[in-house]
Length: 167
Image (cartoon, rainbow, N blue to C red):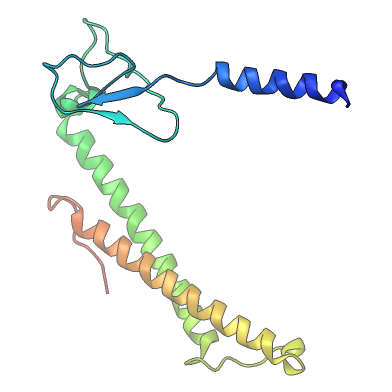
């Protein structure tokens, strides 16, 4: 019999048994490996698999509970500065809308109602043509979604700024 193989195998079995956990009980949101007292009702034995509990970090006593809890905690901006920012944002959105609409017009022209002109290598390979048509269709859907999003953002713009120029 080969004892050289038996010794490492026995060591692995003993090591695996030494890492096994005791019985784990769940009492509400609390996990414990001590047998719960009869006063604790609703404690159940957790079976199958290991349980890992990570304690949440508690904030320091002097630290604010949440930075986003108070929206007025940010720096104050005077109304003229805010109007300037709003108008800049609106100009940017309007320029993006014009670019997106121009791109949409190009794609519609190229798409040609689902029958774009075949390019050189597509005459011999119909699958390349079908792939390009599908790609054009997906690009059109994406650009239409972008245009709708930009128009929604323009609709959210404050009423005090200049009038919207949507088509």
